[in-house]
Image (cartoon, rainbow over all chains, first blue to last red; front, side):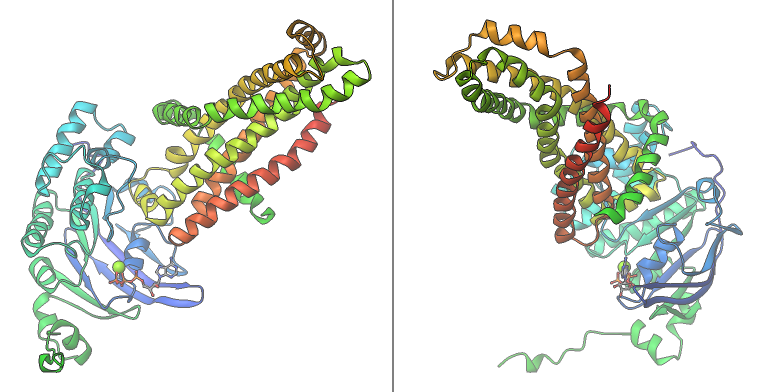
Length: 257
Length: 246
Ligand SMILES: Nc1ncnc2c1ncn2[C@@H]1O[C@H](COP(=O)(O)OP(=O)(O)OP(=O)(O)O)[C@@H](O)[C@H]1O
Ligand SMILES: [Mg+2]
């Protein structure tokens, strides 16, 4: 896939003092971090800790109560800044348009912004679906797909945008282990191909340690720790240890009567 | 319902500003038009036939007793064109099309499809609201013309075949032609155009405002239909009051 690019250099993201409450309940309680150009930055944390809300702020779907988000040093609140940067988000639920076919979903960005002639779009869509292992499913309706397939279509839709910044919300949940590896590889491939800056939210430890340049652990709307995968693995904080090294240790004898 | 009027006017204004992009959205607008026609033509036909019929029946039996049978055509003609055609069709369309607009946009909202559009820099007003508003603003007046003519015909049928009335087709339509002029029909069309905008804006607004899952969608649909109908009936009075001077 190639060049409808206005500018294709990768971008950096800075988050300063980000706070957000919903109906008086604080969800994000002062987040500060920076994601470097072309970095794969993984965010881990327990369910409900505010990871999806954080991603929505970065892509401009939610407006912060306090604090700001800078992309390449410019606040995303400033008019025009969001239009300059090509971003894509792979939603936790896929968020495909149910009234369109799979192919129309994947090509939507190109069609609506009239970036390519229709034959070209069809080719790009086919290529992109092939990358996520869904070759030839263009004419299916999203409602006929499984959860994992929807998520892969959502990834294909994001790839077509050729983003400078890509946000993944739980890209491997609902996928079988083999497909999870394919997706992890694609995250790295995309980065190699286009130097994209990636922010990945995931509970999947294998994915996180496999793709991350740095990992941030967040809990109850605050950052506990940011570091390389090795630093995170060897960290001594009990909360981080508990989260990273949680194992399935059920007492099976108690379940039988 | 009235606390949202400001938001609705804002949505309407933004949609007007999006008009230069209407040509780009022509395919979606045509799809919507087709859907509206498909969903409502048959119902509109039956409804109008019976409305015209009942008008002739109610008025006819009284008028004929007093020897005024020859004015039935004009009476049915004017009532249908100025009042019953536009109002009844608008209520029908609010229930049939307004509800489906609110449901469709509401479920897109609830299932994050609208968020996805926004992350792709696709303006939901251009993509969703504009085609729907254009389609309904074109479709409803056309539907009203159709409805008025079917209503006139319904009145003629009842006048001719009901034994209490017994006014021939010819006498009925002669009187209708004398009494009804183009202004009366235009009057109804202006009303229905305004009502179409009301239905479109109220329903799209409710859809975009949806919070929560299926229950939230249900609530939006109900509100869209009820609010549209209430606004139509209130505006009908004021529009009539204004148009009466012309
Ligand atoms: N639009 C909203 N209105 C009210 N509360 C919200 C909203 N969005 C998120 N929340 C709340 O914010 C908190 C964090 O939600 P979020 O979806 O970010 O969690 P998460 O870290 O992504 O969890 P998971 O790993 O389960 O996806 C939750 O308690 C949720 O109830
Ligand atoms: Mg989440």
